Length: 181
Ligand code: 5GP
Image 1 (cartoon, rainbow, N blue to C red):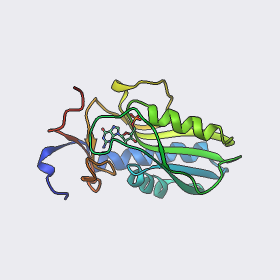
Image 2 (image 1 turned 90 degrees about the vertical axis):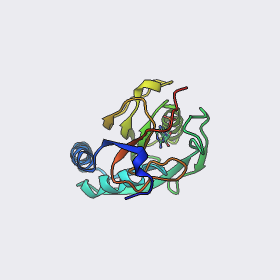
Image 3 (image 1 turned 45 degrees about the vertical axis):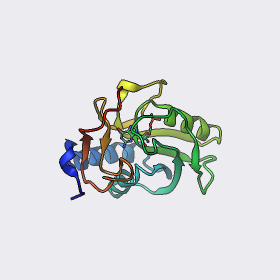
């Protein structure tokens, strides 16, 4: 158990996460049957989701990572997107699945999708574990999503608050943080 979890209430349990990820992997596996898939995970928050997802996937997958600027020390989005780590391999002509932890305003995803599209993959789809539509600022379609969640700052299962709580096996809500002022 992570420290200070008395401030965090469970939103999505470990069991619910694992069940939904199995379903997602089944859908993705079916859609990419017979094709080599390159999964691009967005650091850092998606690492745990990625690890569980690929263990359930019944197809060949390559993995690469991109890093973007995040909230830093605050729970408010700066609205600014910056690539902090780029891919190690080319996406040209490949079937790419972009894996995100959470889509909030959608600005990060919009930027990543536009950036990757310009590099001409054979196909590009998006999978996000959590979809928080209440604060969306740009239109962006998700090909696969795990859960739609309310407008709250969540932590756990890879997601942090000031680098804490990433190791929680569930998704929880920070009760003391108010990001909606
Ligand atoms: P967006 O660009 O869609 O506003 O935000 C995307 C990124 O912001 C996510 O990849 C994640 O790093 C961060 N983020 C958005 N909402 C939350 C949240 O509720 N909790 C945490 N820990 N990070 C969030």
